[in-house]
Image 1 (cartoon, helix red, strand yellow):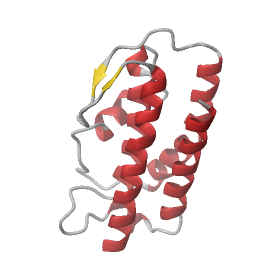
Image 2 (cartoon, rainbow, N blue to C red):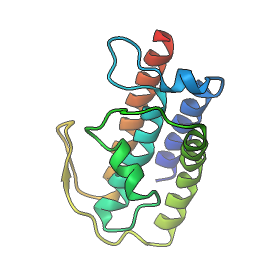
Image 3 (spheres, rainbow, N blue to C red):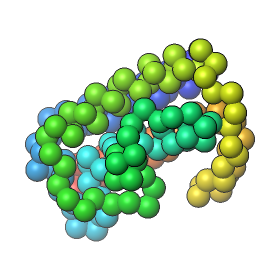
Image 4 (cartoon, rainbow, N blue to C red):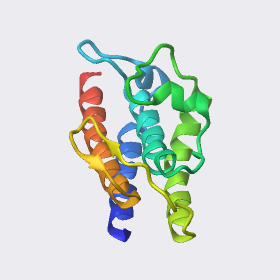
Length: 151
């Protein structure tokens, strides 16, 4: 699992570095041909990691239900995100890595509800969820780079 957490840390660092100099307007802009924006992708990876690891294990997520509803799979931006929410998303992207590591080490994930992904594979364990999440976040890193290029 150490390697999986190193991959998560690297992808999140790359995501955060990709948007560090972006204005609030740029983060919220949806370029022609896209369905979402930079900040939605950031919120989406944060929420998805929580759902894949915590919710599927029957453990309370470390982000609230309003954030989950706003950024979960199948959503898209409906309004501009304010600066405070951008700061919150960026902070939680860093903090949730350490929280998840601690929760894994403490044995807080005792159960896992099998989940068939839209990617065509079924997750059977927390370990598989963490691995799949890394794939998911890398894919969204690619979207972030494409969105940034389209600005």
